[in-house]
Image (cartoon, rainbow, N blue to C red):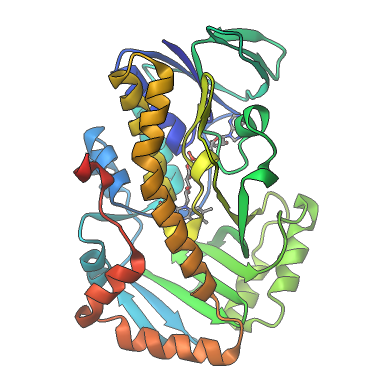
Length: 387
Ligand SMILES: Cc1cc2nc3c(=O)[nH]c(=O)nc-3n(C[C@H](O)[C@H](O)[C@H](O)COP(=O)(O)OP(=O)(O)OC[C@H]3O[C@@H](n4cnc5c(N)ncnc54)[C@H](O)[C@@H]3O)c2cc1C
Protein backbone atom coordinates (compact mmCIF):
# COMPACT_ATOMS: atom_id res chain seq x y z
CA UNK A 1 0.00 0.00 0.00
CA UNK A 2 1.08 3.58 -0.59
CA UNK A 3 0.70 5.28 2.78
CA UNK A 4 1.10 8.95 3.63
CA UNK A 5 2.44 9.69 7.11
CA UNK A 6 2.01 13.28 8.22
CA UNK A 7 4.73 14.11 10.76
CA UNK A 8 8.35 12.99 10.78
CA UNK A 9 8.74 12.84 14.57
CA UNK A 10 9.11 9.81 16.81
CA UNK A 11 5.77 8.16 15.99
CA UNK A 12 5.94 8.97 12.25
CA UNK A 13 9.49 7.71 11.70
CA UNK A 14 8.86 4.52 13.71
CA UNK A 15 5.71 3.91 11.70
CA UNK A 16 7.58 4.53 8.43
CA UNK A 17 10.30 2.05 9.43
CA UNK A 18 7.85 -0.74 10.23
CA UNK A 19 5.54 -0.11 7.26
CA UNK A 20 8.56 -0.39 4.98
CA UNK A 21 9.69 -3.49 6.88
CA UNK A 22 6.30 -5.11 6.16
CA UNK A 23 6.50 -4.32 2.44
CA UNK A 24 4.46 -1.12 2.14
CA UNK A 25 5.49 2.19 0.56
CA UNK A 26 5.36 4.95 3.15
CA UNK A 27 5.80 8.62 2.26
CA UNK A 28 6.57 10.95 5.17
CA UNK A 29 5.81 14.66 5.08
CA UNK A 30 7.35 16.85 7.77
CA UNK A 31 6.43 20.47 8.28
CA UNK A 32 9.94 21.46 9.43
CA UNK A 33 12.34 22.36 6.59
CA UNK A 34 14.92 19.79 7.81
CA UNK A 35 15.26 17.52 10.81
CA UNK A 36 14.65 19.50 13.99
CA UNK A 37 17.46 20.99 16.07
CA UNK A 38 17.81 21.73 19.77
CA UNK A 39 15.04 20.44 21.97
CA UNK A 40 14.71 18.84 25.36
CA UNK A 41 15.66 15.74 27.30
CA UNK A 42 13.53 12.64 27.72
CA UNK A 43 13.57 9.62 30.00
CA UNK A 44 13.34 6.60 27.73
CA UNK A 45 12.43 3.11 28.87
CA UNK A 46 9.70 0.46 28.68
CA UNK A 47 7.91 -0.13 25.39
CA UNK A 48 9.85 2.49 23.44
CA UNK A 49 13.12 0.86 24.43
CA UNK A 50 11.77 -2.52 23.31
CA UNK A 51 10.71 -1.17 19.91
CA UNK A 52 14.10 0.56 19.54
CA UNK A 53 15.80 -2.78 20.34
CA UNK A 54 13.76 -4.48 17.59
CA UNK A 55 15.01 -1.75 15.23
CA UNK A 56 18.63 -2.33 16.32
CA UNK A 57 19.28 1.25 17.48
CA UNK A 58 19.71 0.87 21.26
CA UNK A 59 23.55 0.76 21.15
CA UNK A 60 23.58 4.02 19.26
CA UNK A 61 21.13 5.59 21.73
CA UNK A 62 23.14 4.33 24.71
CA UNK A 63 26.28 5.90 23.24
CA UNK A 64 24.57 9.33 23.24
CA UNK A 65 23.08 9.30 26.71
CA UNK A 66 22.87 12.44 28.78
CA UNK A 67 25.00 12.23 31.91
CA UNK A 68 22.40 11.51 34.62
CA UNK A 69 23.46 10.07 37.95
CA UNK A 70 20.88 11.73 40.17
CA UNK A 71 18.03 14.19 40.47
CA UNK A 72 18.70 16.70 43.25
CA UNK A 73 15.86 18.62 44.86
CA UNK A 74 17.21 21.91 46.16
CA UNK A 75 15.95 24.80 48.27
CA UNK A 76 16.33 28.50 47.51
CA UNK A 77 19.89 28.54 48.89
CA UNK A 78 20.82 25.64 46.58
CA UNK A 79 21.01 23.12 49.47
CA UNK A 80 20.03 19.57 48.49
CA UNK A 81 16.83 18.60 50.34
CA UNK A 82 16.37 15.16 48.72
CA UNK A 83 17.88 13.16 45.89
CA UNK A 84 16.77 10.40 43.55
CA UNK A 85 19.73 8.27 42.48
CA UNK A 86 19.73 6.71 39.02
CA UNK A 87 20.26 3.30 40.63
CA UNK A 88 16.93 3.64 42.46
CA UNK A 89 15.17 4.91 39.33
CA UNK A 90 16.34 1.81 37.45
CA UNK A 91 15.03 -0.42 40.25
CA UNK A 92 11.67 1.34 40.06
CA UNK A 93 11.48 1.04 36.29
CA UNK A 94 12.69 -2.57 36.34
CA UNK A 95 14.34 -2.46 32.92
CA UNK A 96 16.82 -0.55 30.80
CA UNK A 97 16.67 3.24 31.19
CA UNK A 98 18.22 5.91 28.98
CA UNK A 99 18.28 9.68 29.42
CA UNK A 100 18.38 11.17 25.92
CA UNK A 101 17.85 14.36 24.01
CA UNK A 102 14.58 14.05 22.09
CA UNK A 103 16.53 14.91 18.94
CA UNK A 104 18.96 12.00 19.55
CA UNK A 105 16.07 9.58 19.28
CA UNK A 106 14.61 11.39 16.26
CA UNK A 107 17.97 11.36 14.48
CA UNK A 108 18.48 7.65 15.13
CA UNK A 109 15.00 6.91 13.79
CA UNK A 110 15.58 9.21 10.81
CA UNK A 111 18.83 7.45 9.93
CA UNK A 112 17.06 4.08 10.17
CA UNK A 113 14.62 5.07 7.39
CA UNK A 114 16.34 7.76 5.32
CA UNK A 115 17.66 5.42 2.60
CA UNK A 116 14.41 3.46 2.29
CA UNK A 117 11.61 5.98 2.71
CA UNK A 118 10.59 9.10 0.78
CA UNK A 119 10.74 11.94 3.34
CA UNK A 120 9.52 15.32 2.11
CA UNK A 121 10.45 18.25 4.36
CA UNK A 122 8.69 21.61 4.51
CA UNK A 123 5.30 20.15 3.59
CA UNK A 124 1.90 19.95 5.24
CA UNK A 125 -1.54 18.73 4.24
CA UNK A 126 -4.13 21.42 3.58
CA UNK A 127 -7.09 19.23 2.58
CA UNK A 128 -8.15 15.58 2.55
CA UNK A 129 -11.06 13.91 0.81
CA UNK A 130 -12.10 10.31 1.10
CA UNK A 131 -13.61 8.76 -2.02
CA UNK A 132 -14.45 5.05 -1.47
CA UNK A 133 -11.10 3.44 -2.29
CA UNK A 134 -8.37 6.00 -1.47
CA UNK A 135 -7.59 9.31 0.21
CA UNK A 136 -7.05 12.41 -1.92
CA UNK A 137 -4.57 14.83 -0.35
CA UNK A 138 -3.72 18.44 -1.19
CA UNK A 139 -0.39 19.79 0.08
CA UNK A 140 0.72 23.31 0.99
CA UNK A 141 2.44 23.72 -2.39
CA UNK A 142 -0.90 23.02 -4.13
CA UNK A 143 0.09 19.55 -5.36
CA UNK A 144 -2.50 16.78 -5.12
CA UNK A 145 -1.85 13.07 -4.69
CA UNK A 146 -3.77 9.90 -3.85
CA UNK A 147 -2.83 7.39 -1.15
CA UNK A 148 -4.32 4.14 0.11
CA UNK A 149 -4.14 5.41 3.69
CA UNK A 150 -3.26 8.63 5.51
CA UNK A 151 -1.76 8.28 9.01
CA UNK A 152 -1.45 11.36 11.21
CA UNK A 153 1.65 11.39 13.41
CA UNK A 154 1.88 15.16 13.63
CA UNK A 155 1.93 15.62 17.38
CA UNK A 156 -0.34 17.05 20.05
CA UNK A 157 -1.54 19.93 17.84
CA UNK A 158 -2.15 17.60 14.88
CA UNK A 159 -3.54 19.19 11.72
CA UNK A 160 -4.48 15.76 10.37
CA UNK A 161 -6.73 15.39 13.40
CA UNK A 162 -8.15 18.86 12.81
CA UNK A 163 -8.90 18.08 9.15
CA UNK A 164 -10.38 14.62 9.62
CA UNK A 165 -11.82 14.54 13.16
CA UNK A 166 -12.49 18.11 14.30
CA UNK A 167 -10.99 20.98 16.29
CA UNK A 168 -8.38 20.43 19.01
CA UNK A 169 -10.77 21.78 21.65
CA UNK A 170 -12.98 18.70 21.20
CA UNK A 171 -10.19 16.39 22.37
CA UNK A 172 -7.87 18.48 24.56
CA UNK A 173 -7.63 18.02 28.30
CA UNK A 174 -5.47 20.68 29.95
CA UNK A 175 -3.50 19.74 33.04
CA UNK A 176 -3.23 23.32 34.30
CA UNK A 177 0.44 24.01 33.49
CA UNK A 178 2.53 25.83 30.91
CA UNK A 179 6.11 24.72 30.23
CA UNK A 180 9.08 26.37 28.54
CA UNK A 181 12.57 25.15 27.82
CA UNK A 182 15.78 26.21 26.12
CA UNK A 183 19.54 25.59 26.24
CA UNK A 184 21.71 27.71 28.54
CA UNK A 185 25.47 27.88 29.13
CA UNK A 186 26.47 25.45 31.91
CA UNK A 187 27.75 27.93 34.45
CA UNK A 188 26.43 25.90 37.40
CA UNK A 189 28.86 22.97 37.27
CA UNK A 190 25.98 20.51 37.08
CA UNK A 191 28.09 17.46 36.33
CA UNK A 192 25.91 14.38 35.81
CA UNK A 193 23.05 15.71 37.94
CA UNK A 194 19.65 17.30 37.45
CA UNK A 195 18.44 20.07 39.71
CA UNK A 196 14.76 20.60 40.64
CA UNK A 197 13.76 23.76 42.47
CA UNK A 198 10.11 24.33 43.42
CA UNK A 199 8.20 27.35 44.66
CA UNK A 200 4.44 27.59 45.12
CA UNK A 201 2.91 27.08 41.68
CA UNK A 202 6.18 26.96 39.74
CA UNK A 203 9.21 24.75 39.23
CA UNK A 204 12.64 25.24 37.62
CA UNK A 205 14.62 22.25 36.38
CA UNK A 206 18.18 22.26 35.05
CA UNK A 207 19.91 19.28 33.47
CA UNK A 208 22.94 18.54 31.31
CA UNK A 209 22.45 18.43 27.52
CA UNK A 210 24.47 16.38 25.04
CA UNK A 211 26.52 19.45 24.08
CA UNK A 212 29.58 20.03 26.31
CA UNK A 213 29.25 23.27 28.26
CA UNK A 214 25.51 23.45 27.72
CA UNK A 215 22.54 22.64 29.99
CA UNK A 216 18.80 22.65 29.40
CA UNK A 217 16.57 24.87 31.53
CA UNK A 218 12.96 23.73 31.90
CA UNK A 219 10.25 25.79 33.55
CA UNK A 220 6.79 24.65 34.63
CA UNK A 221 4.12 26.90 36.09
CA UNK A 222 0.49 26.56 36.99
CA UNK A 223 -1.89 28.41 34.70
CA UNK A 224 -5.42 28.29 33.39
CA UNK A 225 -4.21 29.17 29.88
CA UNK A 226 -5.31 26.81 27.13
CA UNK A 227 -2.56 27.79 24.73
CA UNK A 228 0.95 29.23 25.13
CA UNK A 229 1.49 33.01 24.80
CA UNK A 230 2.11 34.33 21.25
CA UNK A 231 5.77 33.87 20.24
CA UNK A 232 6.65 37.56 20.53
CA UNK A 233 5.39 37.65 24.14
CA UNK A 234 6.85 34.39 25.44
CA UNK A 235 10.04 35.72 26.99
CA UNK A 236 8.16 38.43 28.88
CA UNK A 237 5.43 35.99 29.95
CA UNK A 238 8.02 33.57 31.33
CA UNK A 239 9.83 36.35 33.22
CA UNK A 240 6.56 37.47 34.70
CA UNK A 241 5.50 33.94 35.73
CA UNK A 242 8.90 33.42 37.43
CA UNK A 243 9.42 36.88 38.91
CA UNK A 244 11.38 36.70 42.20
CA UNK A 245 11.80 32.93 41.96
CA UNK A 246 15.29 32.84 43.48
CA UNK A 247 18.84 33.31 42.14
CA UNK A 248 19.06 30.12 40.04
CA UNK A 249 15.85 30.87 38.15
CA UNK A 250 16.77 34.50 37.72
CA UNK A 251 20.12 33.57 36.09
CA UNK A 252 18.42 31.09 33.77
CA UNK A 253 15.80 33.63 32.74
CA UNK A 254 18.56 36.04 31.74
CA UNK A 255 19.68 33.43 29.18
CA UNK A 256 16.21 33.03 27.61
CA UNK A 257 16.29 33.39 23.81
CA UNK A 258 14.62 36.44 22.31
CA UNK A 259 12.99 34.35 19.57
CA UNK A 260 11.79 30.78 19.13
CA UNK A 261 11.30 30.07 22.80
CA UNK A 262 9.76 26.59 23.02
CA UNK A 263 6.66 26.96 25.16
CA UNK A 264 3.42 24.98 25.38
CA UNK A 265 0.62 24.05 27.71
CA UNK A 266 0.53 20.54 29.19
CA UNK A 267 -2.30 19.09 27.13
CA UNK A 268 -3.50 15.51 26.90
CA UNK A 269 -5.48 14.29 23.91
CA UNK A 270 -8.33 11.82 24.45
CA UNK A 271 -10.52 10.69 21.55
CA UNK A 272 -13.43 8.25 21.26
CA UNK A 273 -11.89 6.80 18.09
CA UNK A 274 -8.39 7.05 16.58
CA UNK A 275 -9.53 6.34 13.03
CA UNK A 276 -12.12 7.39 10.48
CA UNK A 277 -12.39 5.79 7.04
CA UNK A 278 -8.88 5.46 5.60
CA UNK A 279 -7.32 7.92 8.06
CA UNK A 280 -5.85 6.98 11.45
CA UNK A 281 -3.78 8.76 14.08
CA UNK A 282 -0.83 7.69 16.20
CA UNK A 283 1.49 9.13 18.86
CA UNK A 284 0.66 12.42 20.56
CA UNK A 285 -1.86 13.23 17.79
CA UNK A 286 -4.38 10.85 19.39
CA UNK A 287 -2.92 10.02 22.78
CA UNK A 288 -0.71 12.83 24.11
CA UNK A 289 0.10 12.14 27.74
CA UNK A 290 2.33 15.15 28.59
CA UNK A 291 5.77 15.16 30.15
CA UNK A 292 4.34 14.19 33.56
CA UNK A 293 3.94 10.64 32.25
CA UNK A 294 7.58 10.48 31.05
CA UNK A 295 6.33 7.90 28.55
CA UNK A 296 5.04 9.94 25.57
CA UNK A 297 7.99 9.18 23.31
CA UNK A 298 7.97 5.58 24.37
CA UNK A 299 4.27 5.17 23.64
CA UNK A 300 4.65 7.07 20.35
CA UNK A 301 7.06 4.32 19.30
CA UNK A 302 4.61 1.70 20.54
CA UNK A 303 1.89 3.36 18.43
CA UNK A 304 4.00 3.44 15.26
CA UNK A 305 5.05 -0.17 15.67
CA UNK A 306 1.63 -1.57 16.58
CA UNK A 307 -0.18 0.33 13.83
CA UNK A 308 2.22 -0.99 11.17
CA UNK A 309 1.99 -4.48 12.60
CA UNK A 310 -1.83 -4.43 12.65
CA UNK A 311 -1.84 -3.35 8.99
CA UNK A 312 0.46 -6.30 8.27
CA UNK A 313 -1.73 -8.76 10.15
CA UNK A 314 -5.11 -7.68 8.71
CA UNK A 315 -6.00 -7.46 5.01
CA UNK A 316 -8.75 -4.97 5.77
CA UNK A 317 -7.51 -1.56 6.97
CA UNK A 318 -10.62 -1.05 9.11
CA UNK A 319 -9.97 -4.28 11.00
CA UNK A 320 -6.32 -3.26 11.39
CA UNK A 321 -7.23 0.16 12.79
CA UNK A 322 -9.65 -1.42 15.26
CA UNK A 323 -7.11 -4.02 16.39
CA UNK A 324 -4.41 -1.35 16.84
CA UNK A 325 -6.69 0.85 18.93
CA UNK A 326 -7.98 -2.04 21.04
CA UNK A 327 -4.42 -3.17 21.74
CA UNK A 328 -2.93 0.19 22.64
CA UNK A 329 -5.68 2.35 24.12
CA UNK A 330 -5.96 0.74 27.59
CA UNK A 331 -2.21 1.22 28.15
CA UNK A 332 -2.46 4.85 27.00
CA UNK A 333 -5.46 5.53 29.23
CA UNK A 334 -3.70 4.07 32.27
CA UNK A 335 -0.66 6.29 31.64
CA UNK A 336 -2.78 9.38 30.99
CA UNK A 337 -4.63 8.84 34.24
CA UNK A 338 -1.34 8.51 36.18
CA UNK A 339 0.03 11.60 34.45
CA UNK A 340 -3.04 13.62 35.50
CA UNK A 341 -2.71 12.43 39.10
CA UNK A 342 1.02 13.21 39.13
CA UNK A 343 0.42 16.67 37.66
CA UNK A 344 -1.89 17.53 40.57
CA UNK A 345 0.93 17.06 43.08
CA UNK A 346 3.87 18.05 40.86
CA UNK A 347 4.12 21.69 41.93
CA UNK A 348 2.38 22.36 45.26
CA UNK A 349 0.40 25.60 45.42
CA UNK A 350 1.62 26.68 48.89
CA UNK A 351 4.86 26.90 50.91
CA UNK A 352 3.46 24.29 53.30
CA UNK A 353 2.88 21.97 50.35
CA UNK A 354 6.47 22.51 49.16
CA UNK A 355 7.84 21.77 52.67
CA UNK A 356 5.70 18.60 52.84
CA UNK A 357 6.97 17.55 49.41
CA UNK A 358 10.59 18.00 50.54
CA UNK A 359 9.93 15.93 53.66
CA UNK A 360 8.14 13.12 51.81
CA UNK A 361 10.81 13.04 49.08
CA UNK A 362 13.56 12.80 51.69
CA UNK A 363 11.76 9.88 53.33
CA UNK A 364 10.66 7.81 50.34
CA UNK A 365 13.44 8.24 47.77
CA UNK A 366 15.23 5.16 49.13
CA UNK A 367 15.71 1.57 48.03
CA UNK A 368 13.38 0.47 50.82
CA UNK A 369 10.47 2.22 49.12
CA UNK A 370 11.11 1.10 45.55
CA UNK A 371 7.86 -0.94 45.57
CA UNK A 372 5.85 2.09 46.71
CA UNK A 373 7.55 4.32 44.12
CA UNK A 374 6.80 1.74 41.45
CA UNK A 375 3.11 1.95 42.27
CA UNK A 376 3.33 5.74 42.08
CA UNK A 377 5.07 5.65 38.69
CA UNK A 378 2.45 3.25 37.36
CA UNK A 379 3.10 0.68 34.71
CA UNK A 380 6.53 1.31 33.24
CA UNK A 381 7.06 -2.15 31.77
CA UNK A 382 6.96 -2.83 28.06
CA UNK A 383 3.49 -3.57 26.72
CA UNK A 384 5.17 -5.67 24.01
CA UNK A 385 5.91 -8.26 26.71
CA UNK A 386 2.21 -8.97 26.83
CA UNK A 387 1.49 -9.39 23.12
C1 LIG B 1 9.69 19.15 27.74
C2 LIG B 1 9.20 17.78 27.39
C3 LIG B 1 9.67 16.69 28.11
C4 LIG B 1 9.25 15.39 27.78
N1 LIG B 1 9.75 14.35 28.50
C5 LIG B 1 9.45 13.08 28.10
C6 LIG B 1 10.05 11.97 28.74
O1 LIG B 1 10.79 12.12 29.72
N2 LIG B 1 9.78 10.73 28.26
C7 LIG B 1 8.93 10.53 27.20
O2 LIG B 1 8.76 9.36 26.77
N3 LIG B 1 8.30 11.56 26.61
C8 LIG B 1 8.54 12.83 27.02
N4 LIG B 1 7.94 13.89 26.40
C9 LIG B 1 6.86 13.64 25.43
C10 LIG B 1 7.38 13.22 24.07
O3 LIG B 1 8.37 14.10 23.60
C11 LIG B 1 6.21 13.16 23.09
O4 LIG B 1 5.18 12.38 23.64
C12 LIG B 1 6.67 12.56 21.77
O5 LIG B 1 7.62 13.39 21.15
C13 LIG B 1 5.48 12.33 20.83
O6 LIG B 1 5.96 11.91 19.59
P1 LIG B 1 5.12 12.23 18.27
O7 LIG B 1 5.95 11.72 17.15
O8 LIG B 1 3.74 11.72 18.44
O9 LIG B 1 5.00 13.80 18.22
P2 LIG B 1 6.16 14.86 18.01
O10 LIG B 1 7.42 14.43 18.65
O11 LIG B 1 5.57 16.16 18.44
O12 LIG B 1 6.39 14.87 16.43
C14 LIG B 1 5.44 15.39 15.55
C15 LIG B 1 6.13 15.75 14.25
O13 LIG B 1 5.17 16.20 13.32
C16 LIG B 1 5.61 17.42 12.75
N5 LIG B 1 4.42 18.16 12.38
C17 LIG B 1 3.59 18.87 13.19
N6 LIG B 1 2.56 19.35 12.49
C18 LIG B 1 2.73 18.94 11.22
C19 LIG B 1 1.98 19.10 10.04
N7 LIG B 1 0.85 19.80 10.03
N8 LIG B 1 2.42 18.52 8.89
C20 LIG B 1 3.60 17.81 8.88
N9 LIG B 1 4.35 17.63 9.97
C21 LIG B 1 3.91 18.17 11.14
C22 LIG B 1 6.45 18.08 13.80
O14 LIG B 1 7.35 19.01 13.25
C23 LIG B 1 7.15 16.86 14.40
O15 LIG B 1 8.33 16.53 13.69
C24 LIG B 1 8.31 15.19 26.73
C25 LIG B 1 7.82 16.29 26.02
C26 LIG B 1 8.26 17.58 26.35
C27 LIG B 1 7.73 18.74 25.56
